[in-house]
Length: 393
Ligand SMILES: *Cc1c(COP(=O)(O)O)cnc(C)c1O
Image (spheres, rainbow, N blue to C red):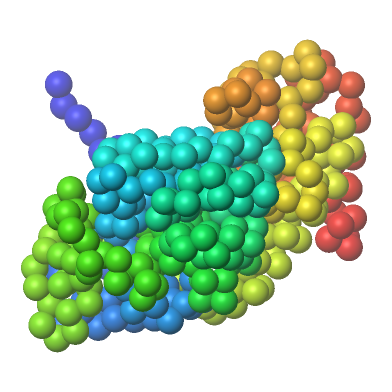
């Protein structure tokens, strides 16, 4: 059997991630590979730290991309900040809160769950009550932008509550970073992780993280060794924080880091506030089009993430058949529902480079076609026209 080169189709990625990658990022990735201790590469890494500090709006010295996907950023936060015997309050309002619980347990700690309905943000009052009931808690973990539902939680309010009870916070902003307002320093976030493939328009496989001084102090005063050698920040810091005397820890994913660097340069060129506003504007146009088809969102308007639109599947429509038609005929990927929302919603991503007018109009036109094929009672053309009206066209 002879194998041939792999040539993937060109898709439009409008699901929960990965999202459309900026062509500048793919081009950067194909630049020559150099050594990971090459002085030129080390300079690029120093720039990367500054670019990530800008994206996170932080001065935290310990800000770096973990050499693995968002899940590894999650694990980096938990294994470094949580020790056996700790109590960690985990807020769960979707898939990713459940994964945080798994992480806490694997650290030998006890999770205390604060549950909210899928599609709702984390309820600050429930967190307050849980912390009063569990004064021994050391850490609070929650998701900023829940990709499984499209709900945005109030990072500042939740962080303030955690701090009043003497806890550090771990925040998942894998889908938040670059897409909605996030101010790590102003909001007092202690530890945060993100991902390269959502609103940063980069390829998957890297996880930006940032830790403030309180978090670093906790890592330094640990009694137990971090259970993961690869993710132990006291070792990783020797490579990323070492200045001129960087020590070998692992071989950095050189070309993947070129890609992340380029995506962060693109973000800086646009300006963070402008990127947040663009996501919001594209969401408004998509929403106007969906309205004309009688499609509604599961999240209340004030808690909606512009970059992740969880849309209710109308009665009588085969949700999987719609996604199949979009993929087969339009090369368009949208996401399915997870957990309790499986079969009940589509998840339409407007992330990073993909949050643009062409994608919005294309997706609406394709959805109109797919719904007509399902026998839905809609007038084709109205959705696209409604979105164009939002753009002032
Ligand atoms: C995508 C995602 C993750 C996991 O990131 P991977 O890169 O898939 O490991 C974690 N949390 C949230 C909120 C996400 O959307």
